[in-house]
Image (cartoon, rainbow, N blue to C red; front, side):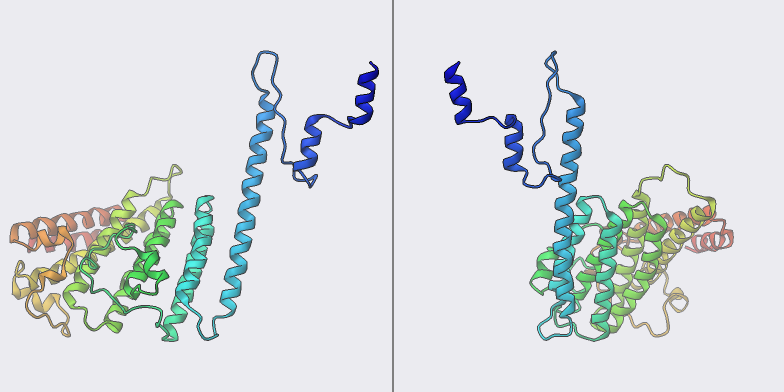
Length: 351
């Protein structure tokens, strides 16, 4: 007893073991790092204790995430403030800001991620307006396969590495950025907004290709337009159905835009069909604009397997043409645009 008393005097116990551990590893009282799990007499764990553990883990994850986002925001603001200084690089700015995008994506914050990409797009258009495209290798669109659009195929090229090395073309960059925006809209199940954005992107980017890259042939432009329009509809159809029924007006609008894309794809088939002699030349004056100048066939400009197969012979082309047109007719009927549907049927009758 005397020995025990002497020991207690030498090593006075001022609290439990768990209190001492908390004192050592939790310097701030409002940030507990140590939690105790209580075992019941039956050998199981107290579920209330587990609930506290999971809550604390979530708090730590959110705290770490907020700290990382704050760090990214400071870096982005600092780099953005230097925009008018010599040596500023848009590609470096893009990579830095995209790190923040990926952090938002990992946390399921798709709206915030999309907002960052939209800001990057606005910054790109400012760069384009200022005609300072020195960070891009060229306009592009000349690599085999560029005509075959797959908006969600980010493994088609090593886009991020090309951006990091300032070797990406304007064509590849625009396709990559738009594809990322589409991916987020799909994750948000914003079908109509996805279609509305694509509706603006296709004609505006096609115009940019004509303006900035004179070396791109009309055949490439038609093949790219066909592939992109069809891919937009394919991607849209892959979006999971919203469990909450969409109102009739919005459903009709979505169907109308899909029909519009498929109608545009069919127009490109008219152009390509005449050029590759699977449609009669007599249609040339009604299909091709007066300014169009199509030389001998350049089949190597087309890499879309569906399109190359369709242009090989008359029967293949007819089958592709009928498939695209019938799909457009179905969407026209869904949105009650019966006159347009009838016009498409007339085109089929003349095939």
